Image (cartoon, rainbow, N blue to C red; front, side, top):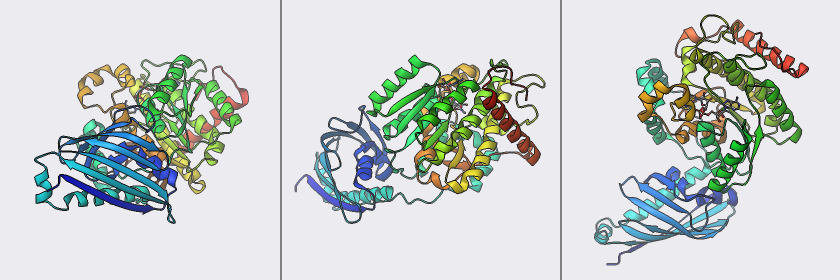
Length: 478
Ligand code: NAD
């Protein structure tokens, strides 16, 4: 009996050819659509093309090594596959069809002994594997998944604190990802503005968006550092559409100057990721007179998002993603003491209150812009191994290090909220690992309508004063 098996399958999907090609040709995405695949990793840098290599780990417990040997953009790719069990040549053809795009997959497997016996014992098994992969690919490309809903079970686990807390670790991420749907929405024409992208979660988010082909503007303080970042991202992703803006986001004169430049340039923003952050201990005051956590974590994203509204409104499926923290669960907004002037100062409390404030803004913006299609969400990245955590919380870092997520895992939900069609259907929520979580675990942290109003009025007044005076001195009086 022959040791070879040939598969020849095809699907039609209602999507433009370039979108289908962009999704399928980045072969690491196979982990989203082939149910037999556990994880897939790209081993080479740059856009997919001749020489791209991938390691695919199968749920059955063995690995495959793929190498692209022929690559014709928007038309065809040929890959060689090697593994302990078989070698193969897999060829994928892309053609325009009446429906949109036809994808044809032709694979020739040559089994090494003793797997030839497998074919004798399970005739048709390979065929079924091919069919389920193509069905998975069709589903991924149709991209017609339901909007995620809040789960009572998750919210109960959160409230029980301990069952909730393990979710913040890498174990939580790995558990949740089993339930995720494919994200095939095309990013090649979309523009992301990301703050705090030179390190940690923001850097990982920028890398993921660069890999997806989005145009990116990163905001950073240090020109030399950001130039190096842009060069690194371009080299790794093969994406040249990465630019930068310089601003110290704890300085409102810088935030306003940044907004002026962006508004003047007029490029629509499809994804605004308010990520820049730090924890300040002891209390620090900026040159403008603001307590620094309030300035960086609350006033700055407030001004940036409010002022960039015209660019968001002009965006394609525009999203605002606010990077918050589980720390906000411990605090209520102090609307009459936004800058922690009363009592003994704690950097962690000031940080958590500012994040709580940004959650309130997330809900406000979501309601205000619902009918205009601007989707605003907040997320908790989980506990992530980043320079920020190591510096600000050395003891916590030392104790939890083994359980911390990678920056890429921490960035995942922010990127998903910014990109996926599923996430576009929900606004004003707090997310962890692509799942909705309650924004309060206790009524003690809930503000009254008057406190909410006071917060909004204070921020609006500061914004107004800063804009009218273009002032750089002593405004931190709220
Ligand atoms: P990080 O220190 O590695 O990165 C923070 C980024 O913000 C850096 O690029 C830094 O340059 C930038 N930044 C800080 N101050 C700035 C300023 N004044 N102007 C401009 N940019 C500034 O930290 P990270 O852990 O990646 O944090 C990213 C976000 O995630 C923060 O908002 C943080 O609060 C949030 N977060 C992190 C964790 C975690 O476990 N790492 C948990 C919850 C929330």
